[in-house]
Length: 329
Image 1 (cartoon, helix red, strand yellow):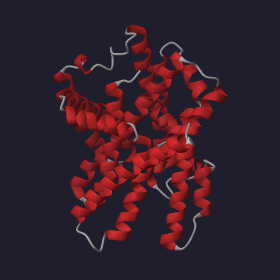
Image 2: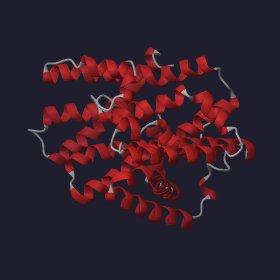
Image 3: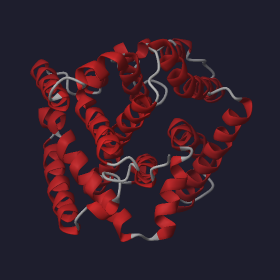
Image 4: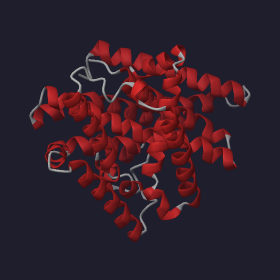
């Protein structure tokens, strides 16, 4: 069963992330910080991951080994190929193959290193986080099924944020982006999936935009974005507690756009969902190569258009290659 709203949210999230990475190098000051809000798409992406995984689990539970085979086949193999291309690009552009960095990604131990976690490609920190959810999936399900499971997750996430802040490690990716930081929003996605199954067998109760009031969405967008901006701009430990208002503000804006119902826009984001993971994996590499090759020959405005169009086209090609070769099953 396809959920149009969930597909839209995933496509919308990846688009804002890709757009953020495209524009950040071209903006400074307040505009730079405003564009950074697009990175909040990661929170919605994690929420949607929790929704999709738990919905699938409720319908057809898999053993731990089968679950890992399926998830790692879909996530690790495309990731490993993308990492290999980064290594080749470093060899071409810098004359050195970064074997240490490539190995840390392929063998997954980069998630435990402050030096290596964001090596090669900064956005790949997210891969570490999502793989941690997969590795601990059985435990996550067991805790979620306890009475008040979601609130347990919320408490754990807030406690982790506090510990990281007290240790002064909020700027270190392996700490600030450890899966416990985002456990509450992953659990929120699981809770929504559970309610969809329990209250509405057609799966439309919580994923039907008609259930959302305009004013609540507007209030959520303004208050969430305002509080998120205040916490982000003041920096420091406040950034660790920024996830909740960030998710509320970002999600409210996304739902408002969906509720306006401009068919072409909504269809574009749903379409983007079909190859969202591939787009996430390769967009930074595409941007880097195009900037390296064309910066001296074209104005910035042209380069920006070429970059994002090339990222989408190559992501589509990458998706086709993975499907045709059946590498990522």
